[in-house]
Amino acid sequence: MKQEITIIIAVLCLGLQSYAKQEIQKEVESDSLSNKTYKQLQNSLIKNIQDSIKSTSYAIAILKKGKKERDTIQILNGFFFLSTINENNDNVLSYSDSIIKISKKINNSRFLGMSFLNKGVYFYEKREFDKSLDNFLTAKLYVDSLPRLNYITEYSIGLLKSRVGEYQEALEIFKKSWMYANERNFKEKDNNNYLITLLSLADGYVKVGKNDSATFYNRLGIEESLFSGNNVKYYDFVLNEGINKYYLKKYDVSYDSISKVIKNFRMKIDRPNLILAYYYYAKTLLEKEEIDSAIVNFKKVDSLFNITNDIHPKSRETYEFLINYYKSKNDDKNQLLYIERLLKVDSILYSNYKYLSKKLAREYDTPKLLKEKERVISGLENKNVKVSNQLMLVSILLGVSLLGLIYYYRRQKTLKRRFNEVMNSKIEHNSEKTTANSGAIGISSDIVNDVLQRLEQFENSDAFLNPSITINDLSKQFDTNSKYLSKIINTYKNKNFSNYINDLRINCVVEKLKLDRKFRNYTVKAIGSEVGFNTTQAFSKAFYKSTGIHPSYFVKKIGEMTNEEM
Image (cartoon, rainbow, N blue to C red; front, side, top):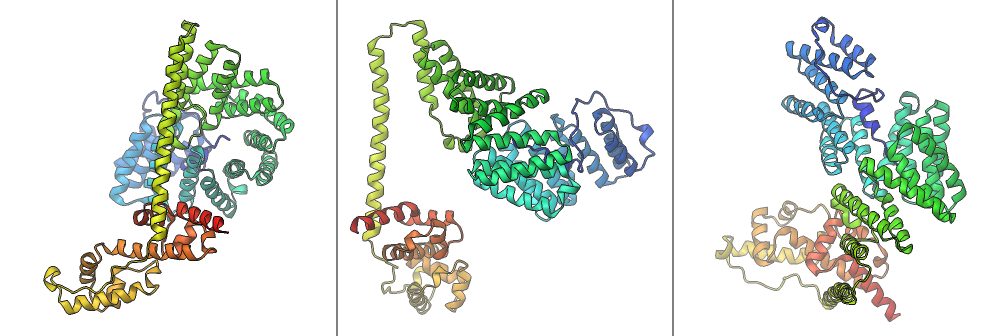
């Protein structure tokens, strides 16, 4: 479902509705406005917000007046109004950068946060999602103490997470946004943004497969849209519920809902939603075994993509179907056409989502598509393809498959060897009696021996499982200082303090997993937490560093071994 980002613009523009964007034709003479107060200028700007030339004249007047009177806040207001009025123009970046430069000098978090948000919106609309995310994350640094701006920032990050397929994380954000919207009575005070937040929540439930919840919130959105007379949001909710019904396999209901919204989206020229509507309309027609009609609608998806050069990863399947359809018809010409289109789609998707490109589930990867493209071109030029070329292609594919199998086999063998090593290992704390050499580290032998003895006692206790333990805490317990303790651990344990603690915890968790079947049923996060790690990532990293395998693999293998014994 198309996620709207107008909620950001609405708040950045002080709660106003979005307006038409035009190139600024000229700088309007503002001498006649110089005697007006800032409040009068801002009221006039708001009144004429639909006219970008007039509203720009008032923004320029605010900026000039602020500069003349050396009023920094009003200078920032002037730049900010200019950046939002022209937010689809590249000038938004220069205006926003001016705000950022001034705001940093006076340490104004509100304007810093709003400007980075504004840049994030700009890059989002340009489909430069990596830059958009960078700016939203930077905005987050400044708006944590500003509830409304923090809400917008979190919501914006949720949109990007949903866009790149991190649906569960996006849903959690949208739940918080929905809670905020209700706490602040958006329903009465800001109904449009109330509906936008509600739509994102409903869409989030569709994407994670919680269809009953999706239906509940879609119905709520439909009722509220009708009550408030918001036809735009009404059709968005109808489409979202139509998609939800498709996943519930209620194809007739889905068909009726989506066919209802297509006409409206065509009238509005709402291309992103129209692409999605045609895509699911075609999918529904396939389920109803109306293949020819499905093909027509898949082609409409392609036509809109050629206009917008933007497509949601979900709609990528359009081209896979068209390729296979024309392949089954032995229509090499059309097969080649849609192979080339799919390569273009993949190029755009990779550019927009390259940091998650491995997660794009694809039946046709790029090398395979390129080979298929060459095969089809060759077939169009010469139907009498030589057997030797076919054998060569088969050999290459077999060779690639064989290399993949060899790599997989070796990888599994290595992991199994490391697993056996861990299973057969015994805890060693390097706690054997050691003769202290005071000259080696510049600490007296008495102190070294005392610390080593205390370390041995520490290793035999569970104190290292405390997640907040630090070298300062331990040095106080040992009646020494952190510098001495660090040197002794480095010298006699052959590792720094952090690795020393982590290794003790990993040894502990390995032994516990060997002995405690119930413990193996915990999640990786819970297991790590039990032995003192604050995050799953920290636990997994430490476990791998110590054992050469990930904790999830170890738990899985030890479980399999236990089942075999039973």
